[in-house]
Length: 205
Image (cartoon, rainbow, N blue to C red):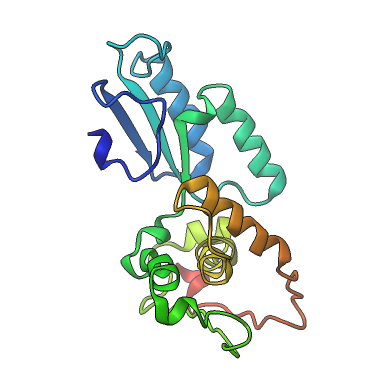
């Protein structure tokens, strides 16, 4: 159902079948899975064939461990899928509280007028969990909790809270304002800005 899609897809005719593949798997599997789907015939090779279903691939973060591995992953994906077929997502943005940030800021007259450094002295973004690694030790050992939470979930929330009002709520306009915020953020110094710890029992998980 085209109207039910949470993103803009101008290439898709609402009367044409659309297959969505949600890949909540380790990133190193993305290219091989997408390639297997393509070669199995489940992916339409011709967007002009109105009878063939279109394919879209939803990819969960993280996208590699660093810039180099991210670029390598994007290059591998480019060999098997087109850019307009892929959606890179952070599932944390689907939380109701996070989704309401833009509405709270820009559709609320009370807050919109005072949401600035002249009226707000400090902002704290906290992420609490009631559990430890609990079976996720291998994942965190590979990517790290800082890569998994800080530079993804919390950086996204930071951008939503600090960004200027976008021209529209379209994906491109929101992303443009987020990028402005992230480019303005001072890089953190591990010795001066951070206190780093480790879950009890992490090494035994």
